[in-house]
Amino acid sequence: MLSSNIKGVTNGFPLGIEVEKVVEKQVEINHDFLRNVFPKIDWKAFSDAARVMGYAELPEEAPEPSVLESDLEFLRKFHHALLELHLEEGALVCPETGRKFPVNKGIPNMLLHEDEV
Image (cartoon, rainbow, N blue to C red; front, side, top):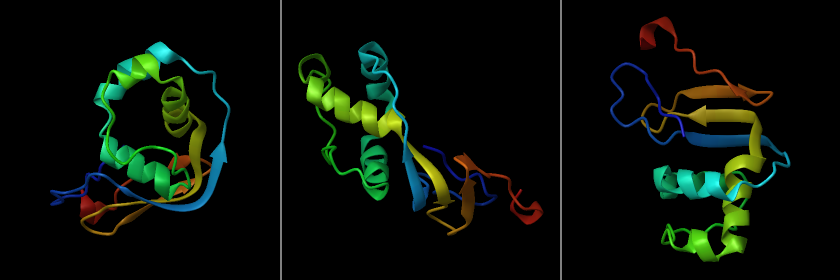
């Protein structure tokens, strides 16, 4: 997740998501990658973002890391939310200022205006 770097913003994480279009792209699953990235994920921000993008298959609470060794179904769902869902059109929204950063063709425009630097 990205955070807002607007001057004076102290609570710029996590950015909200406004969805206009989500695209699913198939990616080969890599269990080792998923196990390594899992501890680095802010679970609440991640699961909330997945829900906003229309994917409600993740648990609200972060599961124990041991689930990564035994639950292939959870790994598949985690993989799908992390790597296969793409915000194609919409906006990322600063939680403090409400400033919207547009997303077009999957690319967020995070450039700040002069008065925000």
